[in-house]
Length: 62
Image: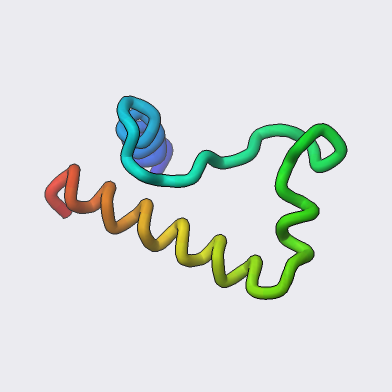
């Protein structure tokens, strides 16, 4: 699982894949906690992950 995650992150960061960036900062420093309080935020996050995993699967032939 660690190897697959590493491959995915390397692939995702290597070029503009049309995926939204994952915030890495605390919410009080521009992170995404405020976004997650909005209506449909969890649906948006789920959509992002499904899209990212589908694209990674295409890239890695899965």
